[in-house]
Image 1 (cartoon, one colour):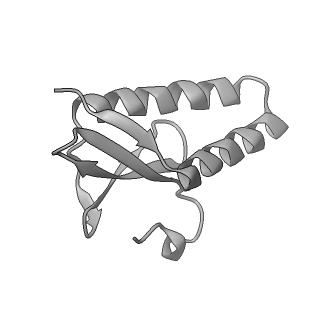
Image 2 (cartoon, rainbow, N blue to C red):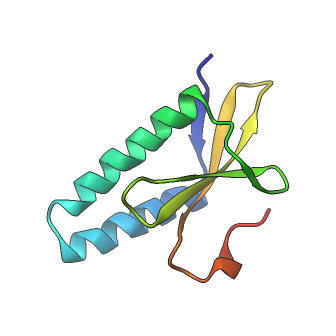
Length: 98
């Protein structure tokens, strides 16, 4: 059973900020980031049951990048709501806590 991915406004802004940052330093890296992000979405669509990090919030590390997607699952509606695309090199106390 596939899950529908819903991106929160906060996560969308963090993704855009990450892409903008990578554009400043490289031509190809933003496309690699987008590709890795799409792969993470595909994983979440098929099997989003990763370890719970805080209350009911789960996380998935984006391969080859210092970012993790924080998300919640609604099994009744078959949706995965991405709450944040957190840069793991930032202060860990600023991780999303809802």
